[in-house]
Image (cartoon, rainbow, N blue to C red; front, side, top):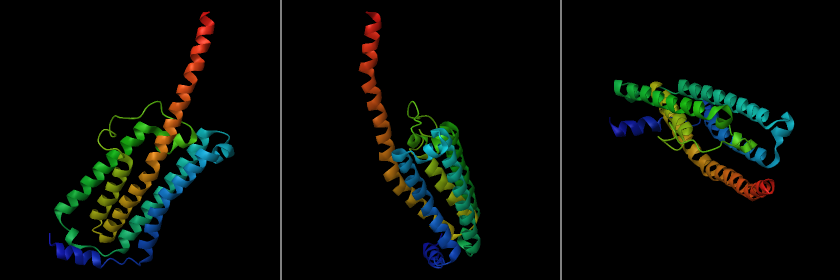
Length: 216
């Protein structure tokens, strides 16, 4: 592939097109939204209070995040349709690469959701609904963040099959946003489980005392 021609193709992307800008805003907004809402939930239990149940609150947030994801995907597709086709992507190799990206991405995303369930996938730990132990099986033994990796690959595959340079640029934005989100989500989630372990350890002496009293 002619790299100069590729550079020229990306330089022709209309970064001021409304569809491109709206898609980019949606990509940035979604992780920002769920991180703000989830942290507020952990500290203030807002959704738990509204729905009288942490599980119901989590299901509501899951619905909102899922809906926002659909809107984001539709806006991404519209941005691709508004972009002129890149002739350099009109090859069998690029087409195969696009399908491979979609295939791997879909496996990572859906297998993650299957293993974690709705509550595990949609920030249940911020609602105090914690898993007993960390998931280490597939796909988490392949990469640390299969949901985000898979989602990025899905965007890439869609962009390549759509022969869209704008789509590839937006995919790069998706990856950057996810990397930034993980800088906040990773330590915060670790803190949640660290606090859980501290509480568990603190309860052990009291439980042991009760056992000894019963034995006496």
